[in-house]
Amino acid sequence: MKIEIAPSILSADFSRLGEEIAAVERAGADLIHIDVMDGHFVPNITIGPPVVASIRPITKLPLDCHLMIENPEKYIEAFAKSGANWISVHIEACDLSKLLPAIKKLGCKAGAVINPPTPIEKIYPYVELADFILIMTVNPGFGGQGYIESCTQKISDLSRFISNKGLKIPIEVDGGIKPDNVRKPVAAGASIIVAGSAIFGTKDYIAAIKSLK
Figure 1 (cartoon, helix red, strand yellow):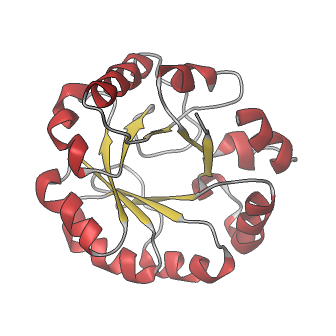
Figure 2: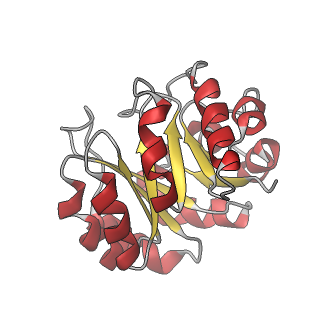
Figure 3: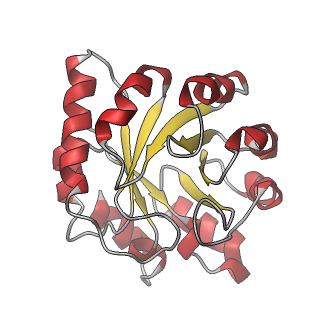
């Protein structure tokens, strides 16, 4: 199974954002993960479509926009027009049966996201509508949190469900993942690893990404 690494720019130096993104691309990143927070769905505020639009010309990598916001249906078009390639939305924030097809119609890959407290079974009815499933392994809102061990079982359960359905839908994981614990989600079935401080908090991005892979 190929492991893809998606550096989260939430942990990047925003005064040098273009340089940071170029550096992780050279270092072997597969995606650029963009955490979008509105201060309502999660207790933090980050960035919006204008920043995504400014990033788009400086990298050839897919832009993976994770919308941790209320009423995401109001914003998916703006993110798609700004250059997002992947857009993921939370089961806790919207009707996935409507929004996942709407994201696809915009020409983007559609992801369904689930938070740690939400039972994994809640996502099962929507798996076949999604291009990927993102399991949060921390409670969303801030970077630098520790990996929640109980989420490993959720990854395993979802992986088994996908396999039993005969589907090939990748599982992305986000939160607290570092070289010393990345084997846990990967062994459970995850193939896309979001990492923030584990990459941007180091001096050698090439070594950091290689270590995660």
